[in-house]
Length: 161
Image 1 (cartoon, one colour):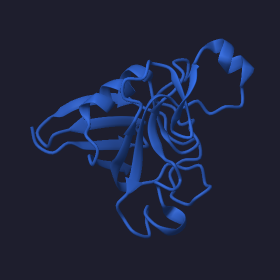
Image 2 (image 1 turned 90 degrees about the horizontal axis):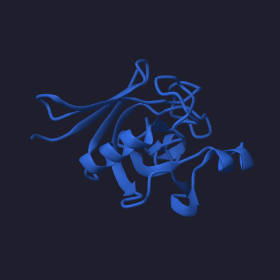
Image 3 (image 1 turned 180 degrees about the horizontal axis):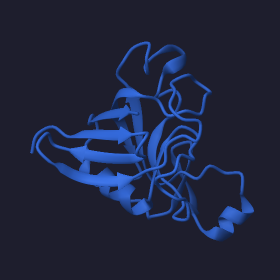
C-alpha cells in the first residue's frame, strides 16, 4: 500500500481515502453551510492541501462529547441535545487539520489549524451529504472511527470543490 491520500469533495459532500491505486474508503460527509473559504471567522470549509496534524479520542466510546479537544465526560444523547440545543456537537474522534499552503490555508488569517478545523463525528441524526457545519468536516460516528483507525498522523488531505 502506497502513501494514503484523503480527498474531500465539497461539491459532492464526500470523503475518499486512496493509496494511489485504489479507493480504500468512501463516505458521505457534511462540510460548511457557508461553503468553501479560508478566512478566519468565515465558518467556511478551507480548500487546498492539508495534513492530519493530530488525532484525538483514541479509545473513547462512540458519542463521547469533546469540548476544546478534550472529552467532557459526557456521552451524547437526545436528552443532552435537548438540554443544550445551541451546542455544535463534536463527537467520538477528532482528526485536526493543518494547512500546507502559506497564504492560502496556513498562517495569518487563513490558518486552518488556528481555525480549529477538524474531521469529526456528530450526532447520528445529522444528515450526511448536505452542507451544515461551521467549517469542519462532519462524519457519522461509525465512519469517523473507521477513518481514525485507517490514517496515521501526517496523512495528506486535499479539500476541493
